[in-house]
Image: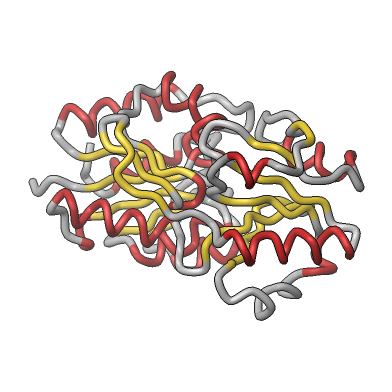
Length: 258
């Protein structure tokens, strides 16, 4: 069997509805590693927010911040930071519109405003994170891998054509990720796979969210969880059961990979 590249989203994929990995998922990951395959996380989370999952599931490799950073054997091999000028312009416009923002570094996140604490908390608490502390000067002191903008559907696509170097990807009803225009989980996965000498046909991705759509479409085999959003299900090569119903294990069994 050719060595394959397996990439797994965290929330809604590796973790069940209680934010815990199923026993079947833990077993599946071990079997893939024992078979010599490359196994990585591919998440919108930063290292700070992903570290507990990385540690508990014994990941040596991880793609973070929607592809803005990649680590092999815990060493960073890829970096794609937000454009500083456009980020500042966006934050200024967002605040003028009453939209809160936050900056995400590799190991910390800070918010730039306090316009609607309740809306920000609803989004952050959805994946077990706390509201970032206030620090408007964060971009002057730290590298910014992505930003968060806390707005709902009323501003959907409003900023898309206004910032040529930024892209806005929804992950919660109250929030979007602000990422580099050409950056994505998909682009970084394919870049890392090429470095490892693994073909695109041997890339297998599992995900459920809107920010997983591109990697599911680009993979040799894209597997959408049963709980996936419609857009991700539509581009996937197969749809498995949900993150509460052994979805990863059953898909790998159907693909004869474990």
